[in-house]
Image 1 (cartoon, rainbow, N blue to C red):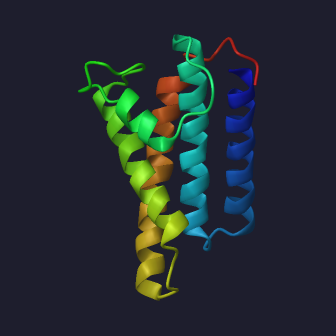
Image 2: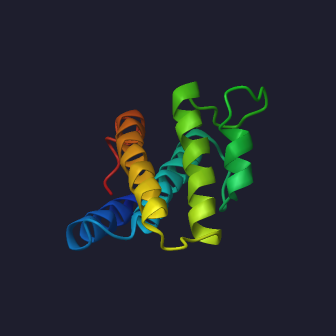
Length: 136
């Protein structure tokens, strides 16, 4: 669990670095880093709350964090799950579809980045109290 907390912290530091160095560029990568911050929260949460070990894929987390799934291993509050689901979809598109470089697309990615950055705060507010006793 502590390894995932450390990786989450490293990803946050990396995000801060690219935000500082490239404030008006690389929005898709900023979104991907935000998503991986959340993935490390989920991995740490899984290890804290269950005996399940090993890395799980994104489909596993979508199924096992879903509050509507009666068999979910680590159901999340609906608002937290909805944010994760949206981040997962966005990050997948950014990783595998990329950008075509148009100004319009950059504007869309910038807007999505701002949403994801705001939603990261929601995730931090949810998960940080859970891990407050864990040294990252």
